[in-house]
Image 1 (spheres, rainbow, N blue to C red):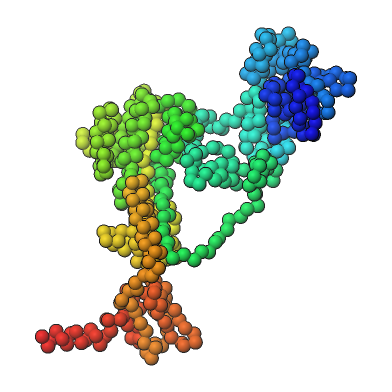
Image 2: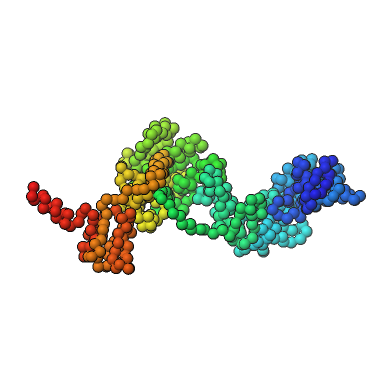
Length: 585
């Protein structure tokens, strides 16, 4: 340990500690502009000057890269230190007069104007080199560097042209202390709706701030390390050493007694309806994108903004996008009407925009839902009954110039209307999130016509499937809202626990059986069985039925060419006996 004195206060620190870190432990603030904890300091700004006395020698040193020594006496606010600091800040103020951190530091030191000549009043770069060193040492691409010398020195790409080496990571803008480097969208958008995240926007992040469990993940497509092999900052700063770049996906096989399928849903891809303009016009967004935009923990802090950063004056909400449409999905997604009403309420609450709701039928079926609909009517939202035919920016009048035009047939007025808006929200429907047909084959269950999983019985067994021990929960069975999903999930969990607690389950009384004397071993029944309950025994040369898997559907009995496959209690002789009994009566 090293003992030193800073502004009259003694402190012990580890060997190799810089003066800046030692002062920080004493809550003594030493100003600096070019220091960042993950970049090796080299004191480019010279603002962190302090007066050091050691072994009878007194000198001015930079605190960010000077390491402490035994018996060192540091003065952070001596007159000599302040004079040197003021001189450096004046030179920086002349170099970068538009840099707010430099102006703030100058004001704190009592400097109102630099004595040196100002070359460019709009300049912000102080030539600290953080961006250059970040691009080279951390990112590892060397896309930017210093060019020229003396007063002409500046940071630029080679020959001042866009660099092919740049990967667009924006690390240079992140590390720049004065805001001289800014990452901008090439299309000039201030808000990019389809790239908004509810959680942090860094490459290593949690999905949302309310994620359960709260475990971060690395987005490999955004992570610098997976692009260049460099960086690794997150691993360096993690005290738990929990970051592992070499971790791979694992497939784990588990033996379980019951399974709950909860594969969820995905939103309908609005690009499948080209007439609605999604993907072509930046202010046409989906419901999920608006949800990210309006969320208080989102990147805009819950403010409703257009792509240019402004506030909309009129917003159109289009219901049933991809639902109740014979060209896409004929079923109703159930949740669209209510979340569209919620959006209308939030827009009214946060802006002064006029709201237009375009609906086919308003389906407010839940508790308190109809009352909420009437509340929106009282708040002044305009509801137009009719399916929207097209959204474009083709202006027919001066009022429509620069705005989105929603064309819709108003079925209540019996006319086609053109509604100019600044933002259009597409209330997309729900679809199965995964390949349900493949999952159904894996788990020996069935799918309905709309590709959602089919329950055993819609009223008596809404959470069960035709395979024992496999239950359904949530939107994998049908489009559901949150209350219905929670209720069904609780029921599915109770069914699974009841089965586990019982320890046994009852077999179907009516199952198939194969007469080994008649079976020719053609294996036709093996391929036809929907429950994979029939296997072929090579040793015996016949097919065999697993009673635990068989559901007695009768497919094998109907297809067996030799009549070896029969259903228990429905054998031919039993059926003939029943027929004879009817005639005797």
